[in-house]
Image (cartoon, rainbow, N blue to C red; front, side, top):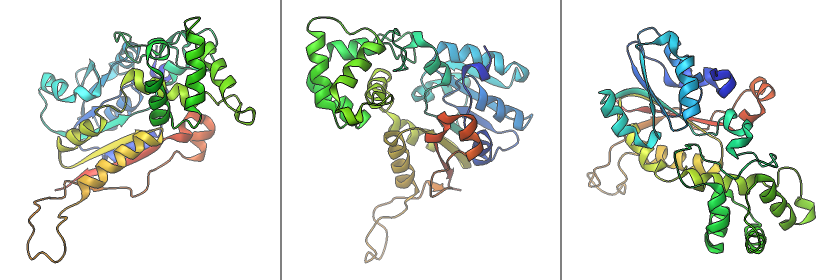
Length: 312
């Protein structure tokens, strides 16, 4: 399986420009997917080395095949990027010249019905695991979580206005039968929202919320991003691609906080807070995909790229 078959990388040129690749640099691709971005990083300079992770076994296989031309210059690990510290230790790497986090779901995961990510795949099992070694599935969340927990998840992770109504119907249905397929859950959602909101994508927010819960996508993201930024060499670059507002808000807040220096009141004669600026924000507003890319790959339309540079 090639990277193109597994996942079409988004904003490759913008990512390379944002990373400002250094000759001899060491880079970390925390979400390898099919290896598309990793390939571009390695191809940009023959002296660059790369460490890449992904928790999806299919992604690791696709990336391994894709990166063969660069044998000896990269190492792949099947791991969550949030385990970056132990991965870098295993690779014998202390500091990085740059890193990329592409926080989106891959095309392969969406387009493979058995993975259970797509709400339009009627007979697909409610799975949604990015790592098939994990035990928690969407079926477990939908059938076994309390109503209070489900409402919280739909509101916090999906920003779903009709969360209470959807959860009430889920609770009613699961009393008599277990909800096992994407089609069954979609039918419940469609029956729970007012008619004027009942269109083909009205299930998107609920499916997104459950997927985030299953994969723990937001848990520890703030701490991980902070830690990776502190692993950069002076002048090193960070590129983060987000695909929904919850992720983007966390990235924006981390970048803003770490780009601030002294926060003492201006009336203080000397600094007592001890804060130093750790990074510089390269793009004040997020970069979005060009029109040509969106037309060729509609999934890129929601992508936002934020870039930061480690202070000298």
